[in-house]
Length: 85
Image (spheres, rainbow, N blue to C red):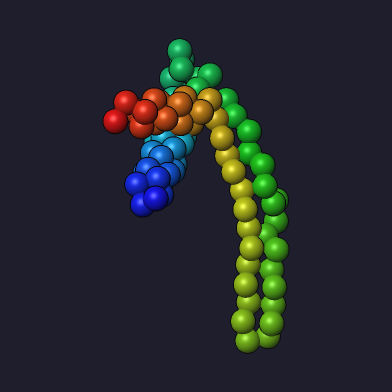
């Protein structure tokens, strides 16, 4: 049972790493002539954060996801590497 939990967490780390690195590479590729299409994507989430003000404590909730082609490719590569390990 512990190995199943461990492999799930490792897979999750691989996927998140692939998304972050792919997103970073997509943003860097936005200004390159032949690779501009890697930065094509969509952003969705809450446009303005939800604020809960309790006089002595103020809590702000916000959630936004920006995904592009490079981050999807990075996630696919991360899953491929995880399966090979």
